[in-house]
Image: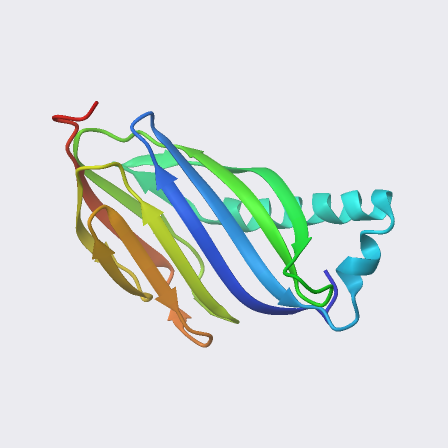
Amino acid sequence: MREEVIPLYAQAVISLNFDGEIKEVLIFDYLDPELYYFNLKRDKTKFEKEKMSLWKRMQGFIDKETAFLNGEEVFSVIEQVEIGFRGRKETPFILFLISTLAPLKEGENIYEVFYENETLDYDVFSIWFFPLRTEITEVISNLKHFTEKNFLIFHGRKGTELEGYEKICFNIKKEGFC
């Protein structure tokens, strides 16, 4: 990615299921006044090489994090990278599809992630979809957050200091679930 490509916003949709999978769609929006990505798309070989470079770089960031679910270390893997445009060639986005196998259980679950302290360079938004009948019991994060039913929503503004640790406690009730 070139320096003239300016990060604007990041958003993530994260879903957990009873089969022990966490699926994440992570999207970064950019301003690209010099049309780096638009022009790159014209050369399939260079475009695919850029996608592979993005894949490796993001997987490297993910690998620096240490995440645990119920005390067991879990590992996230990028499954797909896509580059597209938000209606104009100056506003590309980069999408990552990420999977994590996670030992969810009925009852209380604890997800913790440790990462390097950082300052947000852009606004962020994420929403976690937990299985039905899930009660979110505790959240520790520097990001503003709120819960509604089985959803957990995070907001962060550019300049927010992240302290390198997040924790989500949630209680899954399978009773009565089809």
